[in-house]
Amino acid sequence: MDLRIFTEPQQGAYYDDLLRVARAAEDSGYDAFFRSDHFLAMGDASGEPGPTDAWITLAGLARETSRIRLGTLVTSATFRNPGPLAIAVAQVDQMSGGRVELGLGGGWFEAEHKAYGLPFPPLAERFEILAEQLEVITGLWRTLPGDRFNFAGKHYTVTDSPALPKPVQQPAPPVIVGGHGKKKTPALAARFADEFNVAFSSVDEAAAQFGRVDAACAEIGRDPQEIVRSVAQVICVGRDDAEVARRALVLGREVDELRENGLAGTPAEVVDKLGTWRDRTGATRVYLQLLDLADIDQVELVASEVLPNL
Image 1 (cartoon, rainbow, N blue to C red):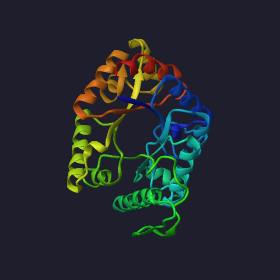
Image 2: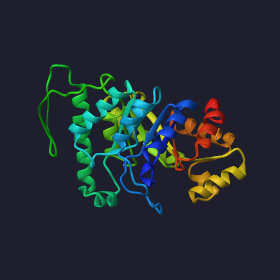
Image 3: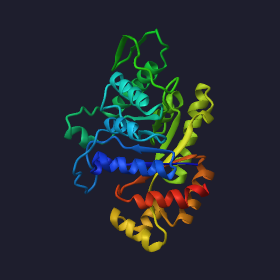
Image 4: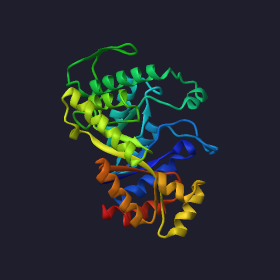
């Protein structure tokens, strides 16, 4: 089971904060460092010193790390047009030597769109935009050298594109699709995803959603085993109950609630819970949501006490 560190910089972070976590994750043996792609803090956080742009951040990390994979969980299709996004991701893939993954979703946080002047269409239209962006981005990446890419959709038209630059990873960097929609989301995953992610859900909810993706794959004749199953869970791991309680206090949450809705407890407890996730959902990859970016000790603790036992 792969473990990946997942951060939420919209809650307030400098680039150097993210660099510190990414380097600790790489040095400790994690598979990847991922970040959200949001522009506005959620909950009671002030958001200071402010958000950081996801793909500018990943471009910097591409040059300051050497092994760890890098990506978004997830970039919103409402933030960027597909052509420039395909260029940006391909460039960061080049800068990293082929270590980038693109998580792409339809967008859901209306307040951040209002805060930064971004259109926020109705849900059905956001799904249309997401589907067309997936088609354009993957189409551009997979266009053979010397050929041209064309696309005519409801929201985007691409005419006679040379489809450059090319990413290092061929035929394309991995694409991650995720979400809880019961019909459209699994259908998009079956068509475009290399990985399907279910975030912050129960074991039963995740298993049911993975089953829907399998069914959507069957409908179009795709082998569902081609799609990596992944989940995202908040972490609050301590060497003993007292350390777990201290970490929960920093997060402003109750230990019992975190045990119920995340990966909280001692390393042994977390290893057992990850085993349950694997056995009941088939998930082979877990994104560990690290909400306290200063807590490098927890990153190292999970790497030394949990990762070797998976």
